[in-house]
Length: 254
Image (cartoon, rainbow, N blue to C red):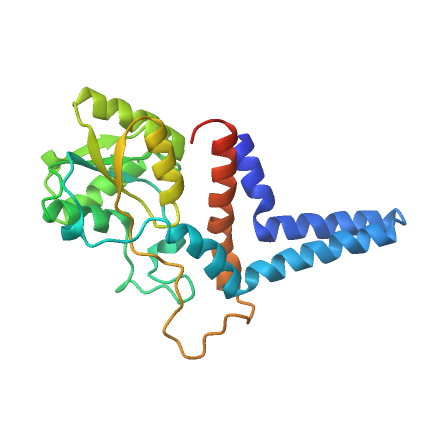
């Protein structure tokens, strides 16, 4: 496990809360009661904070709003469209609502719309096989063909396991094809880190994020301050992005 993965898994709200509670129990058994109560309260507080929709809307919304979602026809032309692998909250349109296949949107949907709007003649899909033998790049390529994007317009980059590797490997592919300017497609939450690492690799990237997912739902019964399991689950991806930005900055990747 890499340092980034370890830190991410550690500070994920539910994981960190359990860790702090276990630490509190151990300290209590060692008769360090004041310290034990402190860590137990800290663990419960951390879980409670991230179970509030207001916390996700504030922390996640700040990242999603850094690069505005723009309709394909309003984006400039480029030489290629780059789509990064990875799924976010099952591609549901709103993290605070149940999954609905009729409203779900994936990154490949955004890429296909850009291609059909004649923003670029090629789509590069980037992502290795996280499980099994089929890479994310191949899965996205299959989805693009189902969206009527021709095979000859799709380029696979199947060796990347991280955002950093996405940028490094894709930049090599771009140089080989003399491509200078690309439209970068990923989730709105992931876009700040993706843009930073691609620019660090010298890629002239234009942000073309999918629609924001961390938004106030239309449900009249929605409460900013009522603890929600969906909010707690969503916090996993939000915290991952902040930790990712920190680790990438420390390692000089952004």
